[in-house]
Each structure stands twice: as C-alpha cells, then as structure tokens.
Length: 297
Image (cartoon, rainbow, N blue to C red):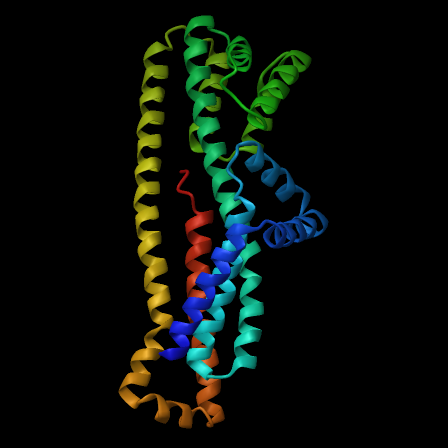
C-alpha cells in the first residue's frame, strides 16, 4: 500500500510539473508525429489530417497525459503483481505503445462518425433538391453548390457530376459513390433514383417523403446507439481497471508477506503474467469494438 501511495504521488508531481513547461511534452508529441508521418499508412495520414482540420485532434498535453497515465499505471499495476522494479519498467515501456494505438482507434471513430453525418446530409439534401428540380444531376449540383458538404464527400459528389455529364447517364456515378461509401441510406437512394431515371416515373413525391422518414428514423437510431455505447464504454473501462486491482484483494486475503513468498514459484509468475495479458487483451478488444463499430447502420 505504501508503494501504491508513493506511485500516485509521483504521477501527480510529474503531471503538475509538465503543466508548467512545454519542452518535455512538445518533444514527446513531436517525436510521435514524426513516427506517424514515417510509418502510418497514407489513408490514415489523410484521416488524421482531416481530424486536425476539424479541430478534434488531441492537444500535446493530452497526449503526454496519456503517456504518463499508461506508463505510470502499467508500472504501478505490474509492481503490485510482481514486486519487481525491472519487470515493472518493462511493462511501463510496453504500455506506452498503447497510446498511439488508442489514438489511432479514436481518430478512426471520429472520422467514421463524420462520414456518416456527411452521407446523411448528402442523401437528405439530394432528395429535397430533386423534389424541386426533378433531375438527379441538377439535384447533385444544388447540393454541391449549397456548401453543406465537406471533403472528401464534397469532392466525390463533384466527381459524380462530372461522370454524369461525361457519360450521359448516372450509372457510373452511382457505382462510384456506392463503392466509396457502404451505407444503406445512400445505396437505397441511388437505387430509387436509378429506377426513376429508367422508368421515367412522374409521381415520386410520396416515395421520396417516405425515404426521408426512413433516413430520419435510421439517424435517430444511430445517435441513440452512440449514447448507449458511450455510457457502456465508461463502465467497461472502469470494470477492466478494477479487474487489474483484484490482486490487492488476493494479497489482503493471503497477507502481502505470504504473497511475496509464493512469487518465487515460477508457475505462479507465469500465471500472473498470463492474467495481466488476458485482462489487457480484454480491455483493448473492448476499446477496439467501441471505436470501430460506430453503429452507422
């Protein structure tokens, strides 16, 4: 327990020290950025740049706080398991690798949510424009010129318009958009407009109104799901952290002295390492699920 208190004090002192200066955390973040730029896939670099443009990238202090939290937490937890400083240092270093991974998952989630909202805007506005113009291409031009879309969706809508004029029909345009954005609401809308174009249907107002209602219901369901998942995610993380500290309960039952004595048994050490890895995998898997399955459709 004394080591636990000391560790918390050290983390508190380090964090407060870092708040007073910029050199250390700026060095850490600049180093991380250079690694991102060198090794990250091109697609991820594009996504990360978009998140920066949206003003949703974490600040250097937030990044450094995560480094301190992950490293200090891993050191503290592993020390409570093994009472070995060398082992704890190794775990702390390995835990630091989790910061870029968590950041990567977070950025992908924010970008996925952004794209979903853009596709929602694209479909609803295209339908409303079509009700006025009775032309799919003219509807696309109206949405593009309205300024409600942002890149990359805006650029893709422009590509759709260019394809339609170049080919003289909307088939390639629809295929292009469907291949880039796998959303039910956009594919359903494209199929409807294709049928209208081929069959020359004149009475489309009721069908389009029903589609707008379907999109609204879908969006409401998605946002409700996000709220529920966010609440569950907070509880999940707390539960995972509590699992780490169950070792304290075991030590209280055995007494710390007895627990340290049984650490000499290699089988016990292996079991404890395995327990740490399993719990970490459990937490990372949950984090991955929360950030990747954004509940779009």
